[in-house]
Image (cartoon, rainbow, N blue to C red; front, side, top):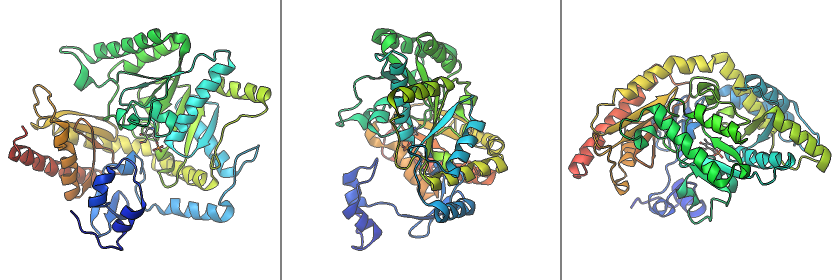
Length: 462
Ligand SMILES: Cc1ncc(COP(=O)(O)O)c(C=O)c1O
């Protein structure tokens, strides 16, 4: 047990805070890690130790830390107008500028932008808009939301219902009725022997259609998907997957909500994952890198068809009855706008394309390691799946927590990575990462992998 000084930040934290996504019992005895500051792609803890943040916080710190321009813009906007709302036809310029900028770079032509504060709220809003749309066009029965097993769309009651994370449903009495989950396209884990990516993608699409038919298409409102699934294990769509899925959605008149919360703003080597995988969304949700995560802000980009309904309904009902106190908070909007300017000036997409091959090739250089089952990724997001037996793809027992051990060792070697269920280690450095820093990240991972191999051997796990 760690002994903590009574007045330390850790001790005060334990006495006062409930942490998200944390084992609260372990937290009582081990206490939190205290992060004091950041600089570029590095963060520093309370003992001054430096870590390369290869997780970009939570897949989000796209411009790294201590960006002076973003700090100055926030300060100046706070002095000019630190808060005002967007309700009842009230506006402010940063919000308008940001909406225009988003519509300019939208991956498909979009009509309007709605602002919220987080990825969860954006997806929650998308679900409400889908319900509202179908009700308004005389199809009130069309309400079911289809997500994917292991998909993640946020923590609000509706966005976690759309998510396929049973660990986040347990004992909350969720998902809500009317939220369905189809199989997720994890080719490495779930393809049959000899099945090509295309055949596997067709099987996944057929499963989606079977679900829709079993539930009755006239009750199915929308399908929500991340272009690359993040928290579900960095799952890339197998070849032809989205092509097949989108044909089915069109056939059954089901809206497509694309969750760009991780993929948006360059992560996959295009401005949006929608472009990388040739998607045709009705609603796009963005958050995280929208403001480089310096302030909370998210947005929904909606199609003409959806906006036309909002307009018609306002005429009928007297108001568009949705919004938040902080919808388009002027400070958040100003910081997000500056973030988009920085992306443009630095040509962030070109930067990602320049350095991504180094990361992807570096990850793949571990493919022959006996603990490595699969290596996958696109742009500056990737994953390595650790296995007990390479030939059979057999995993270690979950309780051995092998990937969690690896991530702890990586931290010991100065690199922050993220482990996920299924012994998956994710790589998602800030978009400004340079090639030398990618090498440093890979070297830290390599040492941690060697440490893990020794641990597995010593404990007789393999
Ligand atoms: C794809 C995706 N959607 C939505 C969310 C939820 O975003 P937030 O935590 O900002 O509510 C996340 C968070 O990790 C995410 O990865």
